[in-house]
Amino acid sequence: MLNTAPRPGKTEPATRPRDQHDELALELAKKLASCAPLRGNFRIPDQLKNFTEFFQLAYQHFDEATKTEVSVSHTAEWLLDNFYVLEQAIRHVEEDMPADYYYRLPKTQDGEPRIYILALAITRQNNARFDKEQIRHFVRAFQNITPLQIGELWALPLMLRLTAMQSLAEGLASITKLKWDALPQPDLWQRDAGTASDNILEKEFPQTTAETLVVNAILNLRMLATQDWKAFFESTSVLEKILRDDPANVYAQMDFETRNHYRGVIEELSRGSSVDETSIALQGIQLA
Image 1 (spheres, helix red, strand yellow):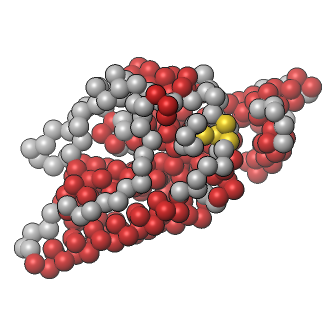
Image 2: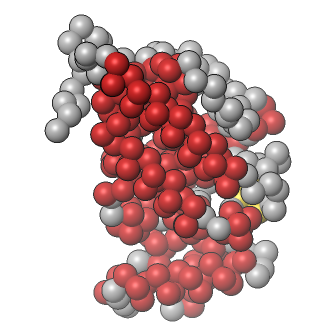
């Protein structure tokens, strides 16, 4: 097993204090409050194709290097040993994010899914290293101002996979000098993108080394593949919290699949009307 501890002689940047995470989450929530579903351009298949081709090139690069060099670099070892993790992540996104699902996600004026921008902000924190509890806290803080839809919360692990792969590709491109034809990314500091300002994100983040980006991205993808996202959804969903206030306490006693059926009905009702999911849930509890 590979040693995941920082290598001797390297100082890892400190993580951000929680109040700064909250500041970023609240700023994002204010800027992204007015997002609405737009068809836009379904670019995920192109993203996945780019990732697949580039990661294969990087794999070949390191594989050939191991045949000619006595010692193998730390980055090469991580990529060669964990390439299956990348393939698994690409397959997950490909299978679980069809075009019709993507089109239903609320987006900014320029067509970026709100939940993708949220995932990108999470990825740019803490040395590009995911922490499940910090992700949970960030999502809850964001929803103090702007509740996320059911579909958005279920899409979060998929979007985190995309942003982790983006970090991985950037790190590998820097190390190998291979050409990385990245698709345009939303600018977190551009006014029209509807996200946070540079004094929140850019100025307070230490730069992350390319090697750290690679190692952390792979660790992130491994973590995402093992998490219980059903439990994460129910612990962060504003809609779920409302439904659990049912006066007879029946909803909370149901099994997950039954609760999910109720949430699905609310999602369908909202999709066919101008009333949002949380308002429908509140009306249901009031009528109960």
